[in-house]
Length: 162
Image (cartoon, rainbow, N blue to C red; front, side, top):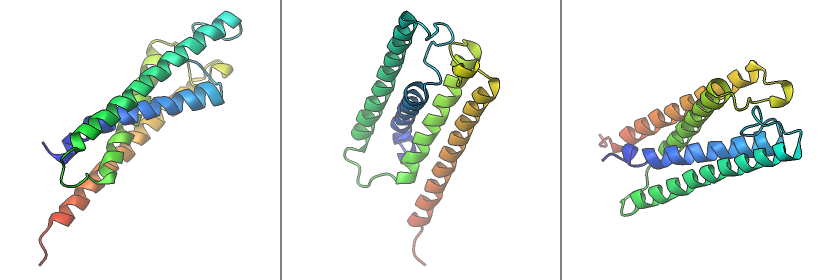
């Protein structure tokens, strides 16, 4: 198995989990723009806020599980390797995982299910949802760029001296 394939799954898990944490911490808690089910259960009542807080907590549990699984898998796959994989390669997979998280979460929760929008406090304008999807595409692009650069760097390092 190539080094790129060895760290693909752990990197993707780490990226998805860390992306979920950024979403939950920044958009749910710090900015309070939305919660997991805030389009379905308004936060204007105590019961509604309690339900949204519960779903946010479950969301964070899943993010934590993804990060722990990514670290455990990365650790097991690196065990016994003669050299660590290039840092850019791992970050490439992490950024790809984060971008995938944004795309899936944005498409499913914002557009298909409509359980929340990026800015529920503004009535969920589609521009914010599209910007969230655009960040997913950008993160995927940066991840793929990092992977390509790490492969090029590995090939250059492995060339014999003239």
